[in-house]
Length: 590
Image 1 (cartoon, helix red, strand yellow):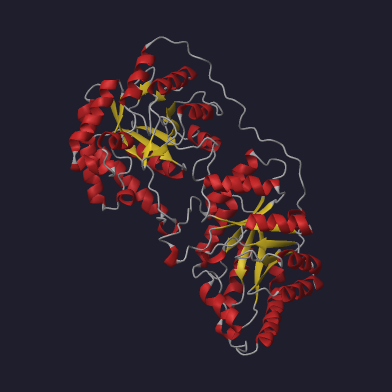
Image 2: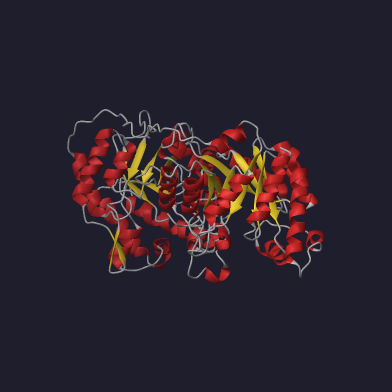
Protein backbone atom coordinates (compact mmCIF):
# COMPACT_ATOMS: atom_id res chain seq x y z
CA UNK A 1 0.00 0.00 0.00
CA UNK A 2 3.08 2.25 -0.39
CA UNK A 3 1.54 4.01 -3.39
CA UNK A 4 -1.13 5.71 -1.25
CA UNK A 5 -1.51 6.82 2.34
CA UNK A 6 -4.81 8.37 3.39
CA UNK A 7 -6.97 7.47 0.41
CA UNK A 8 -6.91 6.45 -3.24
CA UNK A 9 -9.32 8.21 -5.58
CA UNK A 10 -10.13 6.24 -8.72
CA UNK A 11 -11.40 7.80 -11.91
CA UNK A 12 -15.03 7.43 -12.96
CA UNK A 13 -16.79 5.63 -15.78
CA UNK A 14 -15.22 5.05 -19.18
CA UNK A 15 -18.01 3.32 -21.13
CA UNK A 16 -20.94 5.56 -20.19
CA UNK A 17 -18.83 8.72 -20.35
CA UNK A 18 -17.48 7.77 -23.77
CA UNK A 19 -21.06 7.21 -25.00
CA UNK A 20 -22.14 10.54 -23.48
CA UNK A 21 -19.29 12.45 -25.14
CA UNK A 22 -19.46 10.83 -28.57
CA UNK A 23 -22.96 9.42 -28.97
CA UNK A 24 -21.32 6.30 -30.42
CA UNK A 25 -22.58 2.81 -29.67
CA UNK A 26 -19.45 0.69 -29.77
CA UNK A 27 -17.49 -1.32 -27.23
CA UNK A 28 -15.18 1.35 -25.87
CA UNK A 29 -12.30 -1.14 -25.57
CA UNK A 30 -12.14 -1.28 -29.37
CA UNK A 31 -11.68 2.49 -29.44
CA UNK A 32 -8.19 2.01 -27.98
CA UNK A 33 -7.26 0.99 -31.52
CA UNK A 34 -9.86 2.80 -33.64
CA UNK A 35 -9.69 6.27 -32.09
CA UNK A 36 -7.08 6.36 -29.29
CA UNK A 37 -7.15 10.16 -29.02
CA UNK A 38 -10.64 10.17 -27.48
CA UNK A 39 -9.60 7.60 -24.85
CA UNK A 40 -6.46 9.61 -24.09
CA UNK A 41 -8.60 12.73 -23.67
CA UNK A 42 -10.96 11.00 -21.21
CA UNK A 43 -8.01 9.74 -19.17
CA UNK A 44 -6.56 13.26 -19.14
CA UNK A 45 -9.86 14.73 -17.93
CA UNK A 46 -9.93 12.34 -14.97
CA UNK A 47 -6.31 13.13 -14.06
CA UNK A 48 -7.06 16.86 -14.28
CA UNK A 49 -10.09 16.29 -12.02
CA UNK A 50 -7.81 14.89 -9.32
CA UNK A 51 -7.97 11.10 -9.71
CA UNK A 52 -4.98 9.38 -8.14
CA UNK A 53 -5.76 5.98 -9.67
CA UNK A 54 -6.54 5.33 -13.32
CA UNK A 55 -8.17 2.22 -14.79
CA UNK A 56 -7.02 0.94 -18.17
CA UNK A 57 -9.79 0.89 -20.76
CA UNK A 58 -9.92 -2.91 -20.74
CA UNK A 59 -12.92 -3.91 -18.61
CA UNK A 60 -14.46 -5.97 -21.44
CA UNK A 61 -11.20 -6.90 -23.15
CA UNK A 62 -11.74 -10.63 -23.47
CA UNK A 63 -12.60 -12.96 -26.32
CA UNK A 64 -16.16 -13.58 -25.14
CA UNK A 65 -17.18 -9.94 -24.72
CA UNK A 66 -15.54 -8.69 -27.92
CA UNK A 67 -15.99 -11.89 -29.95
CA UNK A 68 -12.49 -11.83 -31.39
CA UNK A 69 -9.29 -13.90 -31.11
CA UNK A 70 -6.93 -13.32 -28.22
CA UNK A 71 -4.32 -11.81 -30.54
CA UNK A 72 -6.69 -8.88 -30.98
CA UNK A 73 -7.33 -8.71 -27.22
CA UNK A 74 -3.58 -8.50 -26.58
CA UNK A 75 -3.33 -5.64 -29.06
CA UNK A 76 -6.17 -3.81 -27.27
CA UNK A 77 -4.48 -4.33 -23.88
CA UNK A 78 -1.15 -2.97 -25.12
CA UNK A 79 -2.81 0.13 -26.57
CA UNK A 80 -4.83 0.66 -23.37
CA UNK A 81 -1.76 0.40 -21.17
CA UNK A 82 0.14 2.91 -23.26
CA UNK A 83 -2.77 5.39 -23.21
CA UNK A 84 -3.33 5.11 -19.45
CA UNK A 85 0.31 5.25 -18.35
CA UNK A 86 1.01 8.24 -20.57
CA UNK A 87 -1.99 10.10 -19.15
CA UNK A 88 -1.17 9.16 -15.54
CA UNK A 89 2.53 10.06 -15.76
CA UNK A 90 3.62 10.63 -12.15
CA UNK A 91 0.23 11.87 -11.02
CA UNK A 92 -1.67 8.58 -10.63
CA UNK A 93 -1.13 4.85 -10.33
CA UNK A 94 -2.45 2.74 -13.21
CA UNK A 95 -4.51 -0.39 -12.57
CA UNK A 96 -5.14 -3.12 -15.10
CA UNK A 97 -8.93 -3.20 -15.28
CA UNK A 98 -10.21 -6.76 -15.71
CA UNK A 99 -13.91 -7.59 -15.88
CA UNK A 100 -15.63 -10.97 -15.65
CA UNK A 101 -15.62 -13.34 -18.60
CA UNK A 102 -19.31 -14.11 -18.82
CA UNK A 103 -21.62 -16.02 -21.16
CA UNK A 104 -24.73 -15.08 -23.11
CA UNK A 105 -26.78 -18.10 -22.11
CA UNK A 106 -26.40 -21.51 -20.53
CA UNK A 107 -25.60 -23.20 -23.82
CA UNK A 108 -22.61 -20.94 -24.45
CA UNK A 109 -21.29 -21.39 -20.90
CA UNK A 110 -17.50 -21.66 -21.26
CA UNK A 111 -15.50 -24.31 -19.46
CA UNK A 112 -14.11 -22.91 -16.21
CA UNK A 113 -10.55 -23.93 -17.04
CA UNK A 114 -10.80 -22.15 -20.40
CA UNK A 115 -11.95 -19.03 -18.53
CA UNK A 116 -9.08 -19.30 -16.02
CA UNK A 117 -6.62 -19.80 -18.87
CA UNK A 118 -7.86 -16.61 -20.53
CA UNK A 119 -7.60 -14.64 -17.28
CA UNK A 120 -3.99 -15.84 -17.02
CA UNK A 121 -3.29 -14.71 -20.58
CA UNK A 122 -4.78 -11.29 -19.84
CA UNK A 123 -2.75 -10.96 -16.63
CA UNK A 124 0.45 -12.12 -18.34
CA UNK A 125 -0.07 -9.57 -21.11
CA UNK A 126 -0.37 -6.78 -18.54
CA UNK A 127 2.63 -8.05 -16.57
CA UNK A 128 4.74 -8.11 -19.72
CA UNK A 129 4.07 -4.37 -19.99
CA UNK A 130 5.27 -3.70 -16.44
CA UNK A 131 1.90 -3.68 -14.68
CA UNK A 132 1.76 -4.71 -11.03
CA UNK A 133 -1.59 -3.25 -9.96
CA UNK A 134 -4.74 -5.19 -10.83
CA UNK A 135 -8.43 -4.35 -10.38
CA UNK A 136 -10.92 -7.17 -10.89
CA UNK A 137 -14.27 -5.38 -10.95
CA UNK A 138 -17.99 -6.10 -11.30
CA UNK A 139 -17.62 -9.79 -10.48
CA UNK A 140 -20.61 -11.76 -9.25
CA UNK A 141 -18.72 -14.71 -7.76
CA UNK A 142 -15.34 -14.97 -6.10
CA UNK A 143 -14.10 -18.41 -7.15
CA UNK A 144 -12.30 -17.33 -10.34
CA UNK A 145 -10.69 -14.42 -8.50
CA UNK A 146 -9.39 -16.76 -5.81
CA UNK A 147 -7.60 -18.81 -8.47
CA UNK A 148 -6.23 -15.96 -10.55
CA UNK A 149 -5.11 -13.86 -7.55
CA UNK A 150 -3.03 -16.79 -6.31
CA UNK A 151 -1.56 -17.12 -9.79
CA UNK A 152 -0.57 -13.44 -9.87
CA UNK A 153 1.04 -13.44 -6.42
CA UNK A 154 3.02 -16.58 -7.20
CA UNK A 155 4.43 -14.87 -10.28
CA UNK A 156 4.74 -11.39 -8.75
CA UNK A 157 4.60 -11.28 -4.93
CA UNK A 158 4.66 -7.46 -4.86
CA UNK A 159 1.56 -7.14 -7.04
CA UNK A 160 -1.39 -5.25 -5.56
CA UNK A 161 -4.77 -6.89 -6.21
CA UNK A 162 -8.21 -5.38 -5.68
CA UNK A 163 -11.32 -7.54 -6.03
CA UNK A 164 -14.58 -5.66 -6.47
CA UNK A 165 -18.06 -7.15 -6.71
CA UNK A 166 -21.38 -6.01 -8.14
CA UNK A 167 -23.91 -6.50 -5.34
CA UNK A 168 -27.50 -5.27 -5.60
CA UNK A 169 -29.31 -3.42 -2.84
CA UNK A 170 -30.82 -6.72 -1.62
CA UNK A 171 -27.25 -7.89 -0.70
CA UNK A 172 -26.94 -10.45 -3.50
CA UNK A 173 -24.99 -10.51 -6.75
CA UNK A 174 -26.66 -11.43 -10.03
CA UNK A 175 -25.22 -14.92 -9.53
CA UNK A 176 -27.04 -15.17 -6.20
CA UNK A 177 -23.97 -14.88 -3.96
CA UNK A 178 -24.54 -13.07 -0.67
CA UNK A 179 -22.53 -9.98 0.30
CA UNK A 180 -21.54 -11.44 3.65
CA UNK A 181 -20.17 -14.60 2.03
CA UNK A 182 -18.07 -12.57 -0.41
CA UNK A 183 -16.56 -10.37 2.29
CA UNK A 184 -15.76 -13.35 4.51
CA UNK A 185 -14.00 -15.08 1.62
CA UNK A 186 -12.04 -11.98 0.64
CA UNK A 187 -11.04 -11.08 4.20
CA UNK A 188 -9.48 -14.51 4.66
CA UNK A 189 -7.74 -14.59 1.26
CA UNK A 190 -3.99 -13.85 1.62
CA UNK A 191 -3.68 -12.84 -2.03
CA UNK A 192 -6.28 -10.04 -2.00
CA UNK A 193 -4.98 -6.65 -0.86
CA UNK A 194 -8.29 -4.80 -1.00
CA UNK A 195 -11.86 -5.69 -1.80
CA UNK A 196 -15.29 -4.15 -1.97
CA UNK A 197 -18.08 -3.08 -4.28
CA UNK A 198 -18.69 -1.36 -7.58
CA UNK A 199 -21.58 -0.85 -10.01
CA UNK A 200 -25.29 -1.82 -9.68
CA UNK A 201 -25.94 0.58 -6.76
CA UNK A 202 -26.01 4.31 -6.37
CA UNK A 203 -23.80 5.78 -3.62
CA UNK A 204 -26.37 5.75 -0.79
CA UNK A 205 -27.36 2.12 -1.31
CA UNK A 206 -23.74 1.03 -1.68
CA UNK A 207 -22.86 2.84 1.54
CA UNK A 208 -25.79 1.10 3.22
CA UNK A 209 -24.50 -2.28 2.05
CA UNK A 210 -21.02 -1.61 3.38
CA UNK A 211 -22.45 -0.69 6.77
CA UNK A 212 -23.86 -4.23 7.12
CA UNK A 213 -20.48 -6.00 7.05
CA UNK A 214 -17.43 -5.87 9.27
CA UNK A 215 -14.83 -3.61 7.63
CA UNK A 216 -12.31 -3.55 10.45
CA UNK A 217 -8.68 -4.32 9.57
CA UNK A 218 -9.52 -4.42 5.85
CA UNK A 219 -8.84 -2.09 2.95
CA UNK A 220 -12.18 -1.48 1.23
CA UNK A 221 -13.03 -0.12 -2.21
CA UNK A 222 -16.33 1.55 -3.13
CA UNK A 223 -17.02 2.62 -6.72
CA UNK A 224 -20.78 3.31 -6.91
CA UNK A 225 -22.77 4.31 -9.95
CA UNK A 226 -23.77 7.96 -10.19
CA UNK A 227 -27.38 6.92 -9.63
CA UNK A 228 -29.80 4.42 -11.12
CA UNK A 229 -30.17 4.52 -14.91
CA UNK A 230 -33.27 5.44 -16.87
CA UNK A 231 -34.15 5.34 -20.55
CA UNK A 232 -34.61 8.64 -22.37
CA UNK A 233 -35.02 8.70 -26.12
CA UNK A 234 -33.77 5.14 -26.41
CA UNK A 235 -30.56 5.92 -24.50
CA UNK A 236 -29.47 4.98 -20.98
CA UNK A 237 -28.89 8.10 -18.89
CA UNK A 238 -27.96 8.85 -15.28
CA UNK A 239 -29.03 11.74 -13.07
CA UNK A 240 -26.52 14.60 -13.25
CA UNK A 241 -25.69 14.69 -9.53
CA UNK A 242 -21.94 15.25 -8.98
CA UNK A 243 -22.39 17.31 -5.80
CA UNK A 244 -24.61 14.70 -4.14
CA UNK A 245 -22.29 11.90 -5.31
CA UNK A 246 -19.20 13.64 -3.93
CA UNK A 247 -20.90 14.17 -0.57
CA UNK A 248 -21.75 10.48 -0.31
CA UNK A 249 -18.17 9.47 -1.12
CA UNK A 250 -16.91 11.83 1.56
CA UNK A 251 -19.16 10.08 4.09
CA UNK A 252 -17.73 6.74 2.96
CA UNK A 253 -14.23 8.08 3.46
CA UNK A 254 -15.16 9.25 6.97
CA UNK A 255 -16.49 5.75 7.63
CA UNK A 256 -13.06 4.29 6.91
CA UNK A 257 -13.36 3.31 3.24
CA UNK A 258 -9.98 4.26 1.80
CA UNK A 259 -10.38 3.46 -1.91
CA UNK A 260 -13.20 5.35 -3.62
CA UNK A 261 -14.23 6.49 -7.08
CA UNK A 262 -17.00 6.12 -9.62
CA UNK A 263 -18.60 3.56 -11.87
CA UNK A 264 -21.40 3.85 -14.45
CA UNK A 265 -22.75 7.33 -15.05
CA UNK A 266 -19.93 9.15 -13.29
CA UNK A 267 -17.85 11.81 -15.06
CA UNK A 268 -14.74 13.88 -14.39
CA UNK A 269 -16.98 16.40 -12.63
CA UNK A 270 -18.01 13.74 -10.07
CA UNK A 271 -14.33 13.06 -9.40
CA UNK A 272 -13.36 16.75 -9.29
CA UNK A 273 -15.97 17.58 -6.64
CA UNK A 274 -15.05 14.47 -4.65
CA UNK A 275 -11.37 15.47 -4.68
CA UNK A 276 -12.30 18.97 -3.54
CA UNK A 277 -14.23 17.64 -0.55
CA UNK A 278 -11.53 15.13 0.35
CA UNK A 279 -8.95 17.90 0.37
CA UNK A 280 -10.80 19.66 3.19
CA UNK A 281 -10.50 18.60 6.79
CA UNK A 282 -13.00 16.20 8.26
CA UNK A 283 -13.53 14.17 11.41
CA UNK A 284 -13.35 10.39 10.81
CA UNK A 285 -15.99 8.15 12.35
CA UNK A 286 -15.65 4.78 14.04
CA UNK A 287 -16.16 1.75 11.81
CA UNK A 288 -19.03 -0.44 12.88
CA UNK A 289 -21.63 -2.53 11.15
CA UNK A 290 -25.38 -2.45 11.23
CA UNK A 291 -27.23 -5.61 12.17
CA UNK A 292 -29.12 -5.75 8.89
CA UNK A 293 -27.96 -9.26 8.02
CA UNK A 294 -29.49 -10.90 11.05
CA UNK A 295 -31.97 -13.50 9.91
CA UNK A 296 -35.53 -13.09 11.08
CA UNK A 297 -36.88 -16.04 13.01
CA UNK A 298 -40.07 -17.44 11.53
CA UNK A 299 -42.64 -19.77 12.99
CA UNK A 300 -42.32 -23.22 11.38
CA UNK A 301 -45.33 -24.47 9.45
CA UNK A 302 -44.17 -28.09 9.44
CA UNK A 303 -42.75 -30.19 6.63
CA UNK A 304 -43.94 -33.81 6.85
CA UNK A 305 -42.25 -34.74 3.57
CA UNK A 306 -38.84 -33.60 4.84
CA UNK A 307 -39.36 -35.25 8.24
CA UNK A 308 -40.35 -38.59 6.72
CA UNK A 309 -37.45 -38.63 4.28
CA UNK A 310 -34.85 -37.70 6.89
CA UNK A 311 -36.23 -40.30 9.32
CA UNK A 312 -35.36 -42.98 6.77
CA UNK A 313 -38.89 -43.79 5.59
CA UNK A 314 -39.37 -44.17 1.85
CA UNK A 315 -41.38 -41.41 0.21
CA UNK A 316 -43.43 -41.34 -2.99
CA UNK A 317 -43.56 -38.23 -5.18
CA UNK A 318 -45.96 -38.05 -8.11
CA UNK A 319 -45.49 -35.61 -10.96
CA UNK A 320 -48.26 -33.35 -12.23
CA UNK A 321 -48.02 -31.06 -15.24
CA UNK A 322 -49.56 -27.60 -14.98
CA UNK A 323 -51.97 -26.85 -17.83
CA UNK A 324 -50.85 -24.89 -20.89
CA UNK A 325 -54.13 -22.96 -20.83
CA UNK A 326 -56.95 -22.24 -18.36
CA UNK A 327 -58.06 -25.88 -18.23
CA UNK A 328 -57.03 -26.39 -14.63
CA UNK A 329 -60.14 -28.06 -13.22
CA UNK A 330 -58.59 -31.55 -13.18
CA UNK A 331 -55.56 -30.65 -11.04
CA UNK A 332 -57.05 -30.61 -7.55
CA UNK A 333 -59.17 -33.80 -8.00
CA UNK A 334 -56.12 -35.56 -9.44
CA UNK A 335 -53.96 -34.43 -6.53
CA UNK A 336 -56.59 -35.66 -4.06
CA UNK A 337 -56.65 -39.05 -5.80
CA UNK A 338 -52.86 -39.31 -5.57
CA UNK A 339 -53.01 -38.34 -1.88
CA UNK A 340 -55.58 -41.06 -1.17
CA UNK A 341 -53.41 -43.59 -3.02
CA UNK A 342 -50.51 -42.83 -0.71
CA UNK A 343 -48.40 -40.14 -2.39
CA UNK A 344 -46.36 -38.07 0.03
CA UNK A 345 -45.95 -35.16 -2.37
CA UNK A 346 -46.68 -33.94 -5.86
CA UNK A 347 -43.96 -32.49 -8.05
CA UNK A 348 -45.04 -29.56 -10.25
CA UNK A 349 -42.97 -29.05 -13.38
CA UNK A 350 -41.96 -25.58 -14.56
CA UNK A 351 -42.77 -24.98 -18.26
CA UNK A 352 -41.20 -28.21 -19.57
CA UNK A 353 -39.56 -28.25 -23.02
CA UNK A 354 -39.38 -24.46 -22.85
CA UNK A 355 -43.14 -24.07 -23.48
CA UNK A 356 -45.18 -21.78 -21.27
CA UNK A 357 -47.53 -23.38 -18.76
CA UNK A 358 -49.28 -22.09 -15.66
CA UNK A 359 -46.65 -21.04 -13.14
CA UNK A 360 -45.42 -24.02 -11.11
CA UNK A 361 -45.40 -22.09 -7.84
CA UNK A 362 -48.99 -20.91 -8.24
CA UNK A 363 -50.14 -24.44 -9.07
CA UNK A 364 -48.19 -25.94 -6.16
CA UNK A 365 -49.60 -23.39 -3.72
CA UNK A 366 -53.15 -24.03 -4.89
CA UNK A 367 -52.84 -27.81 -4.66
CA UNK A 368 -51.21 -27.79 -1.24
CA UNK A 369 -53.72 -25.30 0.14
CA UNK A 370 -56.79 -27.19 -1.15
CA UNK A 371 -55.69 -30.79 -0.58
CA UNK A 372 -53.12 -30.77 2.24
CA UNK A 373 -50.77 -32.77 0.01
CA UNK A 374 -47.20 -31.47 0.03
CA UNK A 375 -46.38 -29.79 -3.27
CA UNK A 376 -42.85 -29.39 -4.65
CA UNK A 377 -42.57 -26.76 -7.39
CA UNK A 378 -39.67 -27.00 -9.81
CA UNK A 379 -37.49 -23.89 -10.00
CA UNK A 380 -35.78 -23.53 -13.36
CA UNK A 381 -32.75 -21.33 -14.00
CA UNK A 382 -34.06 -20.50 -17.46
CA UNK A 383 -36.90 -18.03 -16.86
CA UNK A 384 -36.02 -15.83 -13.88
CA UNK A 385 -33.27 -13.36 -13.18
CA UNK A 386 -32.20 -12.75 -9.58
CA UNK A 387 -34.95 -10.21 -8.95
CA UNK A 388 -37.64 -12.54 -10.29
CA UNK A 389 -36.20 -15.52 -8.41
CA UNK A 390 -36.14 -13.77 -5.06
CA UNK A 391 -39.69 -12.50 -5.58
CA UNK A 392 -40.80 -16.03 -6.43
CA UNK A 393 -39.09 -17.47 -3.36
CA UNK A 394 -40.72 -14.93 -1.06
CA UNK A 395 -44.08 -15.69 -2.63
CA UNK A 396 -43.83 -19.46 -2.32
CA UNK A 397 -42.65 -19.10 1.24
CA UNK A 398 -45.68 -16.97 2.16
CA UNK A 399 -47.82 -19.73 0.63
CA UNK A 400 -46.18 -22.14 3.12
CA UNK A 401 -44.39 -24.13 0.43
CA UNK A 402 -41.21 -25.50 2.00
CA UNK A 403 -39.87 -27.91 -0.62
CA UNK A 404 -38.41 -27.10 -4.04
CA UNK A 405 -36.64 -28.95 -6.84
CA UNK A 406 -33.87 -27.05 -8.60
CA UNK A 407 -33.50 -27.78 -12.31
CA UNK A 408 -31.64 -26.02 -15.09
CA UNK A 409 -34.71 -26.04 -17.33
CA UNK A 410 -35.13 -27.35 -20.84
CA UNK A 411 -33.75 -24.95 -23.45
CA UNK A 412 -36.01 -22.66 -25.45
CA UNK A 413 -36.97 -24.38 -28.74
CA UNK A 414 -34.63 -23.37 -31.56
CA UNK A 415 -37.35 -21.72 -33.62
CA UNK A 416 -38.32 -19.46 -30.71
CA UNK A 417 -34.89 -18.16 -29.77
CA UNK A 418 -35.13 -15.03 -31.85
CA UNK A 419 -38.19 -14.00 -29.83
CA UNK A 420 -37.73 -15.65 -26.44
CA UNK A 421 -34.52 -15.61 -24.41
CA UNK A 422 -33.64 -17.67 -21.37
CA UNK A 423 -32.06 -15.73 -18.49
CA UNK A 424 -29.78 -18.39 -17.02
CA UNK A 425 -28.45 -15.93 -14.44
CA UNK A 426 -28.17 -19.07 -12.34
CA UNK A 427 -27.10 -22.58 -13.08
CA UNK A 428 -28.24 -25.43 -10.85
CA UNK A 429 -25.19 -25.08 -8.59
CA UNK A 430 -25.44 -21.33 -8.06
CA UNK A 431 -29.20 -21.47 -7.56
CA UNK A 432 -28.77 -24.08 -4.83
CA UNK A 433 -26.12 -21.90 -3.21
CA UNK A 434 -28.45 -18.92 -3.48
CA UNK A 435 -31.25 -20.88 -1.78
CA UNK A 436 -28.83 -21.84 0.97
CA UNK A 437 -28.00 -18.20 1.63
CA UNK A 438 -31.69 -17.19 1.46
CA UNK A 439 -32.41 -19.85 4.07
CA UNK A 440 -29.70 -18.42 6.29
CA UNK A 441 -30.75 -14.81 5.82
CA UNK A 442 -34.55 -14.95 5.65
CA UNK A 443 -35.88 -18.39 6.48
CA UNK A 444 -33.94 -19.38 9.61
CA UNK A 445 -35.95 -21.75 11.77
CA UNK A 446 -38.05 -23.10 8.91
CA UNK A 447 -35.80 -23.34 5.82
CA UNK A 448 -36.63 -24.47 2.34
CA UNK A 449 -35.82 -28.15 1.73
CA UNK A 450 -34.04 -28.28 -1.62
CA UNK A 451 -33.64 -31.10 -4.08
CA UNK A 452 -31.88 -31.38 -7.41
CA UNK A 453 -32.27 -33.44 -10.57
CA UNK A 454 -29.99 -36.20 -11.84
CA UNK A 455 -29.73 -37.51 -15.39
CA UNK A 456 -29.50 -41.20 -14.57
CA UNK A 457 -29.10 -41.89 -18.30
CA UNK A 458 -26.16 -39.53 -18.90
CA UNK A 459 -23.65 -40.89 -21.42
CA UNK A 460 -20.77 -39.84 -19.15
CA UNK A 461 -22.20 -40.79 -15.78
CA UNK A 462 -18.94 -40.22 -13.91
CA UNK A 463 -19.21 -36.56 -14.93
CA UNK A 464 -22.85 -36.57 -13.80
CA UNK A 465 -21.75 -37.91 -10.41
CA UNK A 466 -19.24 -35.08 -10.12
CA UNK A 467 -22.07 -32.64 -10.80
CA UNK A 468 -24.16 -34.37 -8.12
CA UNK A 469 -21.39 -33.94 -5.56
CA UNK A 470 -21.24 -30.23 -6.33
CA UNK A 471 -25.02 -29.94 -5.98
CA UNK A 472 -24.89 -31.66 -2.59
CA UNK A 473 -22.06 -29.35 -1.48
CA UNK A 474 -24.16 -26.36 -2.53
CA UNK A 475 -27.18 -27.40 -0.51
CA UNK A 476 -29.14 -30.19 -2.23
CA UNK A 477 -30.65 -32.45 0.44
CA UNK A 478 -32.11 -35.00 -1.96
CA UNK A 479 -31.66 -36.02 -5.60
CA UNK A 480 -34.44 -37.06 -7.97
CA UNK A 481 -33.45 -39.12 -11.00
CA UNK A 482 -34.80 -39.27 -14.52
CA UNK A 483 -36.76 -42.47 -15.37
CA UNK A 484 -34.97 -45.77 -14.94
CA UNK A 485 -35.55 -48.27 -17.73
CA UNK A 486 -32.23 -49.68 -18.92
CA UNK A 487 -29.70 -52.02 -17.39
CA UNK A 488 -27.16 -49.20 -17.55
CA UNK A 489 -29.42 -46.85 -15.62
CA UNK A 490 -29.70 -49.52 -12.91
CA UNK A 491 -25.90 -49.76 -12.75
CA UNK A 492 -25.72 -45.97 -12.54
CA UNK A 493 -28.23 -46.00 -9.69
CA UNK A 494 -26.10 -48.53 -7.82
CA UNK A 495 -23.09 -46.27 -8.28
CA UNK A 496 -25.05 -43.31 -6.94
CA UNK A 497 -26.01 -45.29 -3.86
CA UNK A 498 -22.41 -46.29 -3.22
CA UNK A 499 -20.81 -42.88 -3.78
CA UNK A 500 -23.27 -40.15 -2.85
CA UNK A 501 -24.04 -39.25 0.79
CA UNK A 502 -27.60 -38.06 0.26
CA UNK A 503 -31.19 -39.18 -0.17
CA UNK A 504 -31.97 -40.59 -3.61
CA UNK A 505 -35.44 -40.61 -5.16
CA UNK A 506 -35.57 -43.07 -8.06
CA UNK A 507 -37.47 -42.08 -11.19
CA UNK A 508 -40.27 -44.24 -12.64
CA UNK A 509 -42.07 -43.28 -15.85
CA UNK A 510 -45.49 -44.74 -16.42
CA UNK A 511 -45.85 -45.44 -20.13
CA UNK A 512 -49.32 -44.53 -21.35
CA UNK A 513 -49.05 -45.84 -24.89
CA UNK A 514 -46.67 -46.48 -27.75
CA UNK A 515 -46.79 -42.97 -29.21
CA UNK A 516 -46.23 -41.36 -25.83
CA UNK A 517 -43.26 -43.63 -25.15
CA UNK A 518 -41.69 -42.86 -28.53
CA UNK A 519 -42.18 -39.13 -27.96
CA UNK A 520 -40.64 -39.29 -24.47
CA UNK A 521 -37.66 -41.28 -25.72
CA UNK A 522 -36.94 -38.94 -28.62
CA UNK A 523 -37.92 -35.51 -27.34
CA UNK A 524 -37.67 -35.32 -23.55
CA UNK A 525 -34.11 -34.70 -22.33
CA UNK A 526 -32.80 -37.41 -20.03
CA UNK A 527 -35.41 -40.05 -20.94
CA UNK A 528 -34.06 -43.29 -22.43
CA UNK A 529 -36.64 -45.99 -23.16
CA UNK A 530 -34.87 -48.98 -24.75
CA UNK A 531 -36.03 -50.63 -27.95
CA UNK A 532 -36.92 -53.86 -26.16
CA UNK A 533 -39.45 -51.94 -24.04
CA UNK A 534 -40.90 -50.09 -27.05
CA UNK A 535 -41.23 -53.41 -28.88
CA UNK A 536 -43.46 -54.73 -26.10
CA UNK A 537 -46.03 -51.98 -26.69
CA UNK A 538 -48.80 -52.60 -29.26
CA UNK A 539 -49.09 -49.58 -31.55
CA UNK A 540 -52.80 -50.05 -32.23
CA UNK A 541 -54.03 -50.83 -28.71
CA UNK A 542 -53.39 -47.94 -26.27
CA UNK A 543 -55.20 -49.65 -23.41
CA UNK A 544 -53.07 -52.78 -23.69
CA UNK A 545 -49.92 -50.64 -24.00
CA UNK A 546 -50.88 -48.79 -20.81
CA UNK A 547 -51.34 -52.10 -18.97
CA UNK A 548 -47.91 -53.26 -20.12
CA UNK A 549 -46.41 -49.93 -19.12
CA UNK A 550 -47.91 -50.19 -15.65
CA UNK A 551 -46.56 -53.71 -15.23
CA UNK A 552 -43.08 -52.59 -16.31
CA UNK A 553 -43.15 -49.70 -13.81
CA UNK A 554 -44.20 -52.03 -10.98
CA UNK A 555 -41.28 -54.37 -11.71
CA UNK A 556 -38.75 -51.54 -11.91
CA UNK A 557 -40.09 -50.01 -8.69
CA UNK A 558 -39.57 -53.26 -6.81
CA UNK A 559 -36.10 -53.79 -8.29
CA UNK A 560 -34.83 -50.35 -7.23
CA UNK A 561 -36.28 -50.50 -3.72
CA UNK A 562 -32.99 -51.49 -1.99
CA UNK A 563 -31.18 -48.61 -3.72
CA UNK A 564 -33.50 -45.67 -3.14
CA UNK A 565 -35.00 -43.57 -0.39
CA UNK A 566 -38.15 -42.96 -2.37
CA UNK A 567 -39.86 -43.06 -5.74
CA UNK A 568 -40.60 -40.32 -8.26
CA UNK A 569 -43.46 -41.50 -10.48
CA UNK A 570 -44.09 -39.69 -13.76
CA UNK A 571 -46.83 -40.10 -16.34
CA UNK A 572 -46.45 -39.75 -20.11
CA UNK A 573 -50.01 -38.42 -20.29
CA UNK A 574 -52.81 -37.58 -17.84
CA UNK A 575 -53.07 -41.21 -16.68
CA UNK A 576 -53.67 -40.51 -12.99
CA UNK A 577 -55.63 -43.73 -12.47
CA UNK A 578 -52.59 -45.79 -13.44
CA UNK A 579 -50.36 -43.57 -11.31
CA UNK A 580 -52.58 -44.25 -8.32
CA UNK A 581 -52.43 -47.97 -8.98
CA UNK A 582 -48.63 -47.84 -9.19
CA UNK A 583 -48.45 -45.91 -5.91
CA UNK A 584 -50.81 -48.36 -4.22
CA UNK A 585 -48.68 -51.26 -5.43
CA UNK A 586 -45.49 -49.66 -4.08
CA UNK A 587 -47.15 -48.94 -0.74
CA UNK A 588 -48.13 -52.60 -0.44
CA UNK A 589 -44.54 -53.72 0.16
CA UNK A 590 -43.09 -50.72 1.99
